[in-house]
Image (cartoon, rainbow, N blue to C red; front, side, top):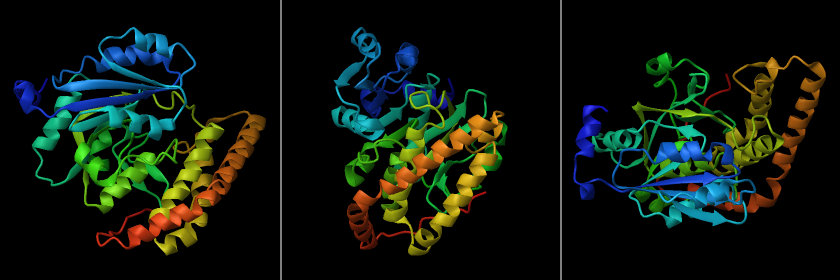
Amino acid sequence: MNNNSADLENKKYSELPKISIVSVNWNGAQILNNFLDNITKLNYPNKEIIIIDNGSTDASLEILKNRDDIIFYSIPKNLGFAGGNNYGIKKSSGDYILLINTDVICEEDLLLNLINKIQNSSVEKIGAVYPIIKLQNGKINTLGSFLYEDYQPYNLGFGEDLEKYSILKNTRNIIGFYGACVLLNKKMLDEIGLMNEEYFLYHEETDLALRGYLNDWKYLLDEKSVVLHLHSYSSKPLSMKKIFYSERNRLFNLIKYAEPKKIFFSFYYTIKRLTLNVFKKKGLHLSEEKNVDFFCVKIIKLAIATIFGWIAVIPHIDQLIHFRLLIRQNKQRKKIITYKTI
């Protein structure tokens, strides 16, 4: 434990801000006990742990019912990542909310370090603080997220060596955070609202971050905190469901926030990005598939999921345009920096 964390831990219980840990489980029985054992060992005294079961059909409920060190709510219907987390946040009483996936493993000082980052910072209106998130292979999962021209969020540093952190951290304008592990300021949520449940899965935290950004909230990376993300446990990599929601929700954010010029050219950037993803290891990893027939079938399925994601935007157009007009009327309208696909 570092000295700063020790100083915080020695404070009186009432002097530490309360943190509500909110985690959504969906059919995660295989990893649930390990997650709960890990999260209950966080050495932060003023906390509560809230687990939302999102309509699981495996052994998750039995596991959760046998734990007396958590607060547990069972939802009969799967409300998605946004809906499940919103449910937990509404049930919480903390000054800060730690959203954390059940496939994340953290060190016991995580909460102490994140709070220390906030209390020692001169930045005003800190909306979120997040750790360095790494993958099982030791590579970086994310140092924060930035946007491509077509509003596809990308995790800074993804797939790079952790030693490159100091070089990577200032190469992009960070516009958001990764929902797998982030400490949110309840004051920000009270001001801008919770996650948009229409998103269901993927990019809902990008929408939340953009709303906060437009209202001058800032997001900080705590380089002293590192967590491990098992990645895509509940929804496997490259699934049609993942591609569908990713593309649909990317378009949600594009229509709501992007400048007209970027909307006009977005199709070009999307096709370029998807093409590069197919043939580059840092993208969809399809370049590693040696079976040509399987490769072709997978490409066809992903293309179908992408097209259906685009079509699914149509019923929401009126609502998206209405939100866009409200933002344009906001006197705090700020430019959102995006980057060309690399």
